[in-house]
Length: 391
Image (cartoon, rainbow, N blue to C red; front, side, top):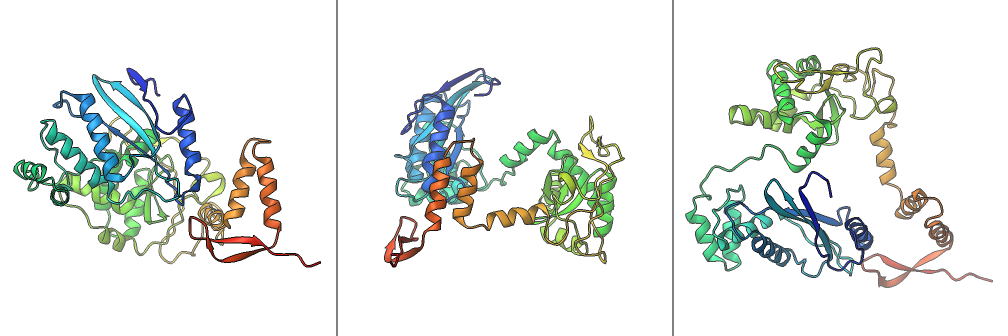
């Protein structure tokens, strides 16, 4: 509903009663409460190529094929149609939780959606778009009995063409918009620091000279920019090398060089600040060498990483010790029993809202329960009955 669009039209929803898009999305969230998934709704958009004259017809055909591919024909959805920069496209948000609690299978959804796109391109006379999944798509088309589309795809030459590499993933593009730091500048700065160093300690110092820092993330070392946003070091350096030289620096090579460092966990420190920061220094952004207009908007006062031989878990800035950092706290919250987490969520709602439900939950938890043998709910969990009280 952003005003950046020239025209926004709310399309008729399916299986929902709210008159506006925000209410419809809230309904989708409520419908998802019975599913065992942390991604209960699915957002995507269809934007036909300019070569397709029948834009509306192509969108309708794409949605029909998409719903058949993923078994979504009866699932509730809502959406909007956008007209922006002389192009019309459509967004939809689907519920992935079925009435019986099962969740729609989205395995290999990128390749499956691209298969749908190839069919629409074939049927509407548009050229085949290159895809890194081209060979898998051709095989799947033949398995589906669409030899006509598979033959067309093979004749297009896209099966032998060099696989395209996206400049950024959708998540990376969102991070770019949020931080205002160009990803290409950040990659270039990290790669320059890599090439100016011969070991982990040298890489760390080279990053700091460019206003960046190195921390320990959930999936390995991360490069932290001036906004405090973490970027996986192996992915950042590998992508930078591939774009600049055409050959990716292997993740194993990055891990090997950084193996001798003991790094502070990303997110540790007082008040959410990076551990080891000097509060007296200017917290403004420092431009990376060679970047335009400030380039990598990185703070020049990050620190907190310990070299090999330093005290494990030590923090320059007096951060929390002994498993008391932000990451550890989140792990403890996630590890709480499901009933405790539900009660906490109810308590966090606006005052008075669902208070009775929270009290009822407390009352039920106080009772003594036993499992009913051989009886389970829709998720396969044993159904419990109240233990009889002895007089």
